Length: 106
Image 1 (cartoon, rainbow, N blue to C red):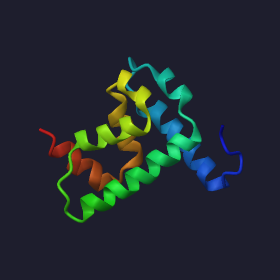
Image 2: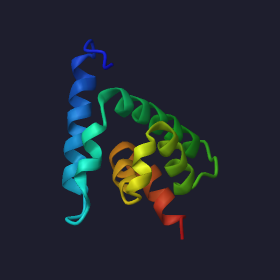
Image 3: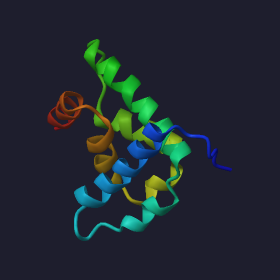
C-alpha cells in the first residue's frame, strides 16, 4: 500500500519523472508499462540512481548494464520493455553519468 504522507517535493518529482518518460519515449514505445510505477518504486529508483552517480563520480567502473540489472531488481516488470531502461536512466541519472555510461557501452 502506498504511503499518502509523501512530502510535496517527492510528489512533484514523481509527477515530473512520469511526464519525462512520456515525452522521451519513442512513438512506438508502449507507455502503459509505466502505469503501475508507483511513487514508492520511483523513490527507490531515484535513491539508487543518486548512489549510482556517486559511484561513477568516484571513479568506479560501472556500465549501463549494471544500472539496468539494478533497476530490474527494484522493479521487475521493466524486463518486458528493455528500451525503458534508457528512459529511466536519462530521467534519473545526472547528465555526466548518463553520458559516461552511454558513451562507454560500445
